[in-house]
Amino acid sequence: TLGALLGGKALKEAAELAPELDRFEMAELAAAASRYPERIKPSVVELLLPKPSYTIETLRFLEKQCGDRMRFSLLMGGDQLAELAGWREAEKILRYPIYVYPRRGQATELPAGDLHLLEEAPLLDFAATDIRAAVAAGEDTSRMLHPKVAWHIRQKGLYRKREGSFRLLQRAVRASAGCAPETTNRTHNEPCPNSK
Image (cartoon, rainbow, N blue to C red; front, side):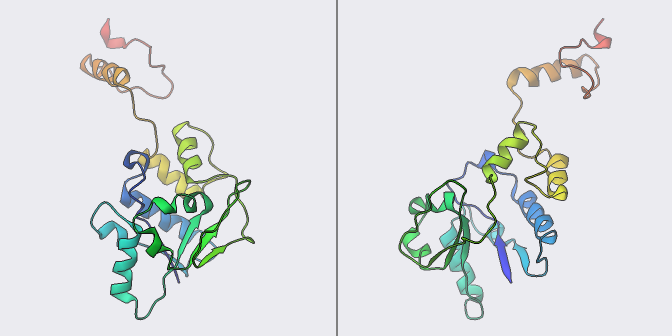
């Protein structure tokens, strides 16, 4: 069974990531829609560990809890591998088998260690960062996401750009004037009918 860990390295900007439980729910939806739903099971382990979350600490916890009956490895994109040297105790992480998903048009240099390039894997033209950017820009993500994951993102309003202070002020003024919240068929500059 392949366990999908959901923490994230401390180098990530927290504002860029969805709340942890939303990320877990999206991983569950994606795993259930995969070719191997019975073999890919997301884990909440990193959500329960102290923050900030570091991969090496998660691996230590897993080894302590069930290392006598399981062998652990990592799966990461080639873009993440390029940053691995900056991770906490990277030399110890490299003692684990690491399976590297290559990125199209990006050379993947494997440092010393038990690393395996997934050369036969189908290559996608986007990474998680591209998905978050597309959602924030309101672009179509249908080729990037399973429909259930896309629906979850829309329902929760994940990865959207934060409203600027002027926009928040404008909403507050509308509310104090007794205006209903704006709907999608009204422009934000339209005057409130109650303000006359």
